[in-house]
Image 1 (tube, rainbow, N blue to C red):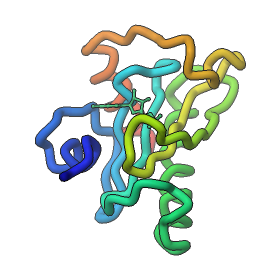
Image 2 (spheres, rainbow, N blue to C red; image 1 turned 180 degrees about the vertical axis):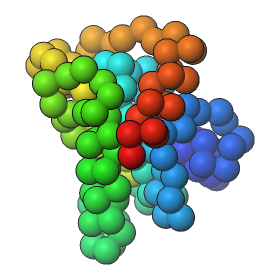
Image 3 (spheres, rainbow, N blue to C red; image 1 turned 90 degrees about the vertical axis):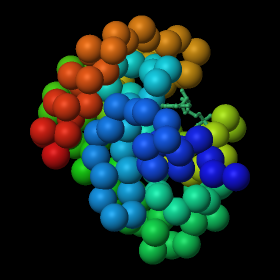
Image 4 (cartoon, rainbow, N blue to C red; image 1 turned 90 degrees about the horizontal axis):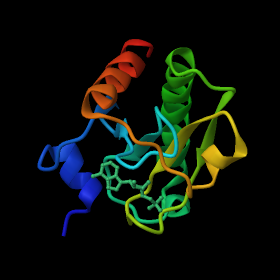
Length: 129
Ligand code: AMP
């Protein structure tokens, strides 16, 4: 069965898309730690990130770096942090989180973002790529 993230890639489930290439996809996390919290994923379904083959893994890191650089240009923050967890969704993904305090990195305190704000953030990050 396709993962929820594969359904996002195929358009079966809506998302706020930030970027897409032949092999990778980036979209805003629906329950963000901070405004601009973005997930970068390989289109190929692999559960654990360190099970990805080296070549795809390194290209996911490069893609994530490009998206992180764009986030930092448009979202006010001290820096963009990168985290990998995967306990909720078994489809490898990199969390890119704009950080101002340690709380932003802890996945405990969540931020409310309106539909309009999600749309504006996704568009702004995409434009900064
Ligand atoms: P984890 O697998 O623990 O790294 O967490 C999965 C992340 O995916 C969480 O931060 C969720 O908020 C996020 N997430 C789950 N479903 C969606 C969705 N439909 N659109 C965007 N983000 C999602």
